[in-house]
Image 1 (tube, rainbow, N blue to C red):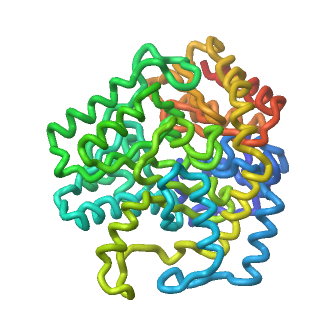
Image 2: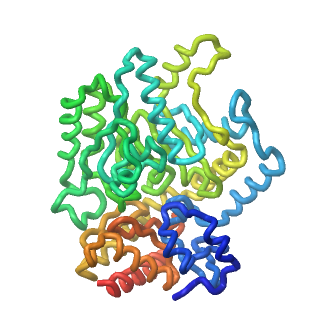
Image 3: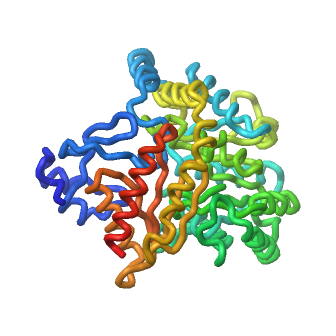
Length: 445
């Protein structure tokens, strides 16, 4: 099906926009243009209703056009549209910082605002290096990420990230090394956390032996890897990483850009999996995707180290920040988003509905020989697909386009289809989404 006929765009306009993470040549032959959004649905240029099977880009767990957020943003625009981020403040940034800490594990209570998840990761890595210098251990500069990890699109993010397609084009990044991923043979089609795979954490000991803890600043992982296709940690794995980092004086960073604020049926991935890191990065759900915003949250001791060594009280404790840090409109959206999550009990709803979602997703097992694995946790699921014509990414693209034609938006990336429905998704919507996906997978088997 062609979707170009009803757009109001000229070819020159289409050509002018170099789109992010998009096959620009294919898209501009047959653009998929979204014109509106409400509740769980997008409207496309053909006037069709499209079920949002990924909550935007893991961003809009509350659905779209949420009245409380719309009202908060509109009021803020009329009151204070922008406030300088350096040396001056506005009330909502402090209110939102406190609100965020209410969702964080005990001890992580100092919030540094950014404009995105990529900036949050960059902030966390910079602070980690600076922290060790403040502690008199300036040789601790190296980072350890993980294969299949995604930590944003900045130079630091692709350096610690472990998705090959996001790295190979750009050459040398920061000095970083990578743990193996946790998709262990024999754990395919696990529901939730697999029983085996914890042993993959022991590879961290080998890296420490090779590079020495005196040279390693931090380990950064996603509690659950989202962009690689919903890779759920095996039981005990994150706990073991925490133990090793503690034993060798290495900071542990959780990238919770996807997992924070309800997606896991918990306040954070840290809470869901029972492990507390030293730093948490976040974005996406903090404003329900309405306005770009991110943050890095630090344990008190890290913050105190900078305050205690900051010199005269008018001096900068850390020369870092962004023009749009703690943007007033983003703060207003963030307060409304988090208050809505709380007042509507949406974290508990995700927790209660997750077993139902799990059953629907795993009902696809055996529907096609093309399905090689299914993984899930909370309101997230990833489906791995066998390569076709030697191209791992081809079948997921074909399936996603078929789903779009059927009226469903899902994410395709690498060899996977990824799903993350809104927190208020009804069982009938889950059923129809999975039925349509099963049909699309069979079509391209």
